[in-house]
Structures are given as structure tokens and as C-alpha cells.
Length: 324
Image (cartoon, rainbow, N blue to C red):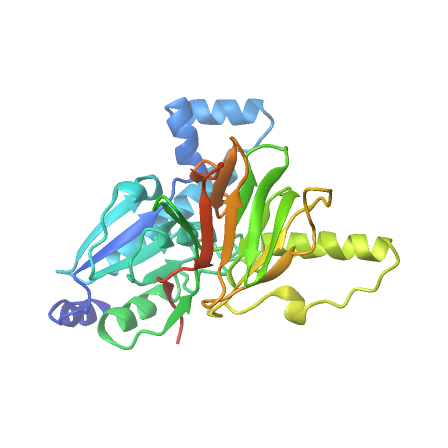
């Protein structure tokens, strides 16, 4: 019955020209890259007091799900598999469908390189992976793929953040942006939001999207609330504890550890970025100023003296296919 169904589907016209499957190396594959053989990897782990079997089992489970995803692609539909480290060099075509098989972070990594191509995100191990961004599992992916290729797609458009520099460089963020120094020294900059502006010396700025509002931003809220309570103040939690919908057309910025002095202020430390009101930052750091996104410190743009950064909502959105 299933074979007959796939035969019929292979004769139908899909709405996509190619399917690109994005994968990530398993822990075992990372160990093999280091130790060359499974036996050497096992020897290393067991002599370090760790069990090898869970790693081998997770590897087998991941590839079982990956093979299943590859096998349910209709005959005649072009497809290929790309490991996530090659994303920066890969060119996605306009009519590609992207399938990620891995953790939530794989969706985050992939989204920055897409231009309106939808993502069908598969959770290969729902028992251990939270899967906030992973609507599909091995149980539901066939139905989701069939609906995506031949039926009605249900898509959630996720707002992203963007830093645009005065030299033309751009950096996208799915969850959040960090603007500051690449060490523990203070970041110095001028901040402008609407008609308000200040000179700052701080530990940097976090800018969060709706998708990221349950992450790094929560730690900022928790720290601020803890300080206020310790000083005898009363804290009124923001609606939904500061989390907001992924599709909301806004970003939230929060300044970490602002230091008030004769040359720096600390009043403009929290606010909203909207399409009408971007955040403007002018660096006053001679060196070591950086802007990076989604916690990937190695992938940064320099933010040193003479650099102006406009933090705004990105024009493009992540298109995440969801369950009906």
C-alpha cells in the first residue's frame, strides 16, 4: 500500500524542485574525526570513566531517522544531504525545501542562510531533545512531508533580528544579538533609541527576538529581579514572564551592568525595537568591539571606533513548517 502511494506521488508535480537535508555530526562522528577508529574512541572514553554505549546508540538512532527521512522522499524528486559546517558555502535555490534533522540549534544555524525557503524540522530523539523548534518526529515527518510537497503547508513566520553596519556589513540573528567587547572589559558606545540617547559603559547589550525571548533574555530578567528583591524592592513580572510570540514584529534590548559615571549614563537600559524605531549604536572602543549572534562568538563582525550599528527587525523571516 505504501509503495503504491509513493509510486502515485512520484508521478505528481511537487511544489519544490529540490530537497536539501541538513545534518549535524553525532558525538561518535566527532570522536571518529579525532581518534580515527571506533575502537580508539571507545578506548579513550572508557579509560576516562565514560560509557561508550549511549554514544553509539545515539549515533545509530540518528542515522536510522536520517535514513528514514531520505527514504520517504518521492522517487524522481532531487535531493541531497549537507552537513551543517558547509552551510556558509552552500547556495540554496529559490525552489528548495529544507529539512533539518537534529537539535533546535540546527534550525537556528540554517535559517541565517535561507531566503524564504521553508524549513521542515525533524526531532530525531524526542526523548532527549526539547524540540521547541522541531515540530516533526520520525512518526509524523512522512505526513508532514506529503502535505508540504502535495497539499497545504502550514507555515509559521519567525521574526529575526539584524545588525547593519555603516560599512555595509550585515549580521542576522534568529534568537539574539550581543553587542559589546570580546573580553571582560567594559564596552563603550553611544546608544540611541527614538529621541533618547546616552553614553554607556557596560558589559554589553542583548537584543532578543521572540524565538530567543525564552533564552538569554530570561537570564537578564532573572538577574535584574534578584537585585531588586535583594534591595527590598517589589518586582512585577512582565506578561508571560517576558516571553513573546515568535511572529511578533518587535525586538527587546537590555543593557548588561550599565555603569553610571561623569561620562556615562544608565537610564536607557531596556526597551523595544520596532520597525519604526531601530536601535542605533556608535562604538567608542578602539579595539575588541564585537557583534555576534545566537551565541556563536567565532562568527562576529567588528564593532570598533568609527562603526555605527543599526539594530532592527530583519526584512526576511524564517519560514518554519508546522503540524496541521
